[in-house]
Amino acid sequence: MSYEKQVNALLLDIYDKILVTEEKALRKGSFKDISVAEMHTLEGIGLYGNRTMSETAATLGITTGTLTVAIDRLVRKGYVERHRDQNDRRVVRIQLTKKGKLAYRMHSKFHRLLVERLVSPLDEPARRLLLETLTEISGFIRDQHARYTQPGPSRQPEGAAQ
Amino acid sequence: MSYEKQVNALLLDIYDKILVTEEKALRKGSFKDISVAEMHTLEGIGLYGNRTMSETAATLGITTGTLTVAIDRLVRKGYVERHRDQNDRRVVRIQLTKKGKLAYRMHSKFHRLLVERLVSPLDEPARRLLLETLTEISGFIRDQHARYTQPGPSRQPEGAAQ
DNA sequence: AGAAATCTTTTGAAAGTCAAAGAGTGGAGG
DNA sequence: CCTCCACTCTTTGACTTTCAAAAGATTTCT
Image 1 (cartoon, rainbow over the protein chains, first blue to last red):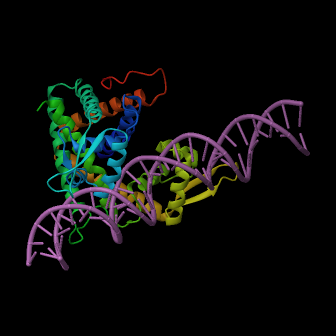
Image 2 (cartoon, each protein chain N blue to C red):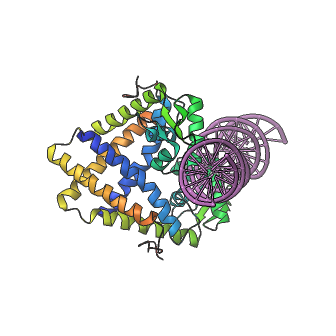
Image 3 (spheres, each protein chain N blue to C red):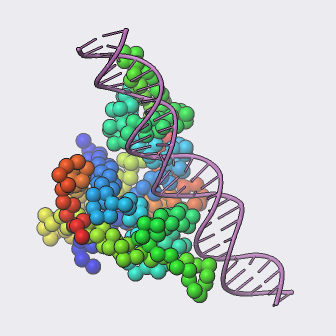
């Protein structure tokens, strides 16, 4: 198998399992009633929140309509509070409740431990390479993202042709 | 920022954008009518398919019920064919149509190009190290997956406590 | 005040998912 | 040869996530 194919297979394997693992970890933890998507919303609001719906939706890359229903559920479950802004009453400000912050911190800790365990067996050169490679991948994906996301003069999706 | 936090941030960034990018790439390509999830199903069936529903569902990690509706749609769109097995008429065998295979190959090519561009700037030692590191990560994620996926004596989700 | 702009929610639709019930087929034992 | 259990798949009902577009509330501008 070619080098590229091996790398591709490994990336797919990793990608595939990570989401499932995270979902299952959440379901077994102290906050069994929130999904990965909901946790992601909590992250979008942030610990020191009081952010508006539009801002948060933009951060998360979803529409405000979608966020409204997500927040409905999170409010019902007690993770988020809604407040109308007193200066501009069109605006809705949202923030995490105590419970929401607790969940947020727990999940951060989970992530931190995952990464710690992941990098702990690596020696210094491996660490450096990992960081460099991830930085490169990140930049690369950002480019691709821009390429395929921007509207514009029907740019040629290389490798997608024929 | 600590090494771990940098790695975590990069991973999140990459993870976040990759799905969106892939979805958008698909929508701009020659097969605008299939989603990433549907492409994933096509991959699950494979080029030399003739696999049963159960097998494919297991490969994809979804229930057969879910697969049934996915296949319904893919048949309607002309990417997949259903055939009852003549030896055991309970079994349904599915395989990609010509169009399905074309879509599969195109998507593979997209992936291969992505990886090629990613690894092309790396020299030989860096390549070796990347492969090793990815292998390690893959093994690690597999362990985590097993840890949180297996049913069993309420294993402690380390770092999920308090 | 009236119109236009802005922010959020509501509504309708689709995909993706599961669990559980239902339908058809196969095989083993009486 | 029947019957019944097991197996494979589909159907059904429910829920989440998502968007686009319409509607509602409020502010700002003329």
